[in-house]
Image (tube, rainbow, N blue to C red; front, side, top):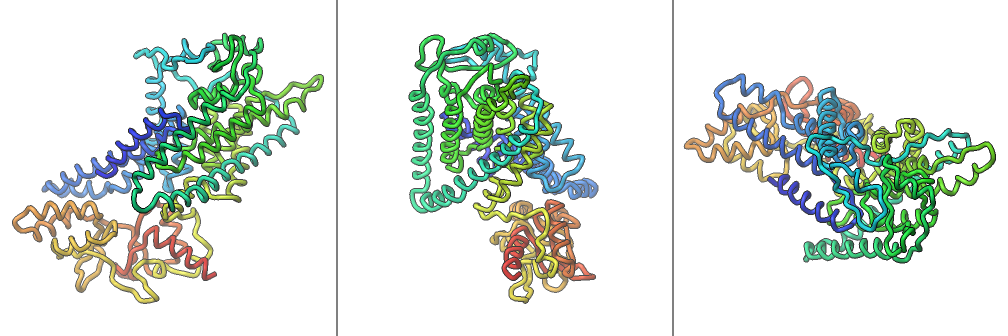
Length: 583
């Protein structure tokens, strides 16, 4: 129920946030993951109720084989992929994003589900977006971007389509491409440092204590005021300029989606800054990815816009507003890359040589900044290629994104990893630390205090409802089920906290609650939970835990199934920190 309330609050608040003009992305990834989690919880509760009320042993066995954790892993991966597909119209990039950024255990079933969900989400977004054939190619202060909706047509159009330019890279341009990768890595890592370590710590200090909710409301009002003031004042202070003949002819071309803003300029003139700040993120991205002859932006305009957007994104992202930063980072990188292209373009202006298109540098800059922010070069490459439709950019873009990730990793954590660290979530690296070579599973489990082992929280097959209530008073998420808690600790299964609470509620209504509870416990427990022997090397325990995407595993005595402890993500994280200090 709590996750459903989070989903409703997220959808409503994000809709208001995007409509207010704050440069925050539509965080469809989190919304899609919440939808997947609620679907799994609802399905698991119905299966749980059906299995408990069934007298068919085979039905119970089928339910026990299909664990809730396994289903949640597949569904959340599919939800993440569909969120990316719906946001950016990039079905394949959604799968890559789920694979590279979120899924520690990947299988054919997970890949198929993620690709199917992402493809359906992208087609649905294309179907409901309508056509912009009448509204996106003319000069106006206000434009109708809704278009005409035809229920019989699905218009598959890239999110950032423009006139394709295929440049021939020279040796000198390869050096510039590598420089863009370095700048993108610096851009993404600086955003994490500024928004995270500085502003994040300040917010944690000042937003805590009494009047916390009132402080957050005031914070959001100030952030919205600041973002609106910057977006309005910059175009008002920016000069107007006349349209060139090439730009006027490009507006008539129906193969592009270019949108100028006049603002307060006279007829035949445009405001470059207003054409970037007074647009939605999708339209602005189209303008930045346009070929230079079709839509010209001066270097000062691009630099001021990029720095201003970076500043207000740092202020907006990380507040009480539930918005993302993917769109703002992509726009900042595209503006920076286009500015670099405008600067280096005159260097190649000599007889017999073709000047490079600034669209190429804008696309590379946006991809590099996103890779420096997310540290997912494969997913970012797939996303930008699908957004632009420029398949010829795959090789140089992946090189640029890889360089951006390497540079950014030297400076700071990725934004996702930083959020995990900032919120005290145990973040585990893909490979075990070197210090784990000298320890075993017995050294990791939480039931070990100064070398002395004490009994874990567990429930016996003969225990009653009173002991179950004592376990629910603890903060643990699951408990081992043993043969006899008094004398025989042989592992018989595992019971989750949610399932145990459901059993207590059901047994409390019966005439003989303890008997009903024991009967339901025998049916509800999950058979064969992950276990390791006490003497298993710690590095093997760590590798298995991470690769399988586990949340917990039980430690048993060597040669027997006597439970001696439990290992969770927190235990592995604390052990890695403690042993790092020892070495």
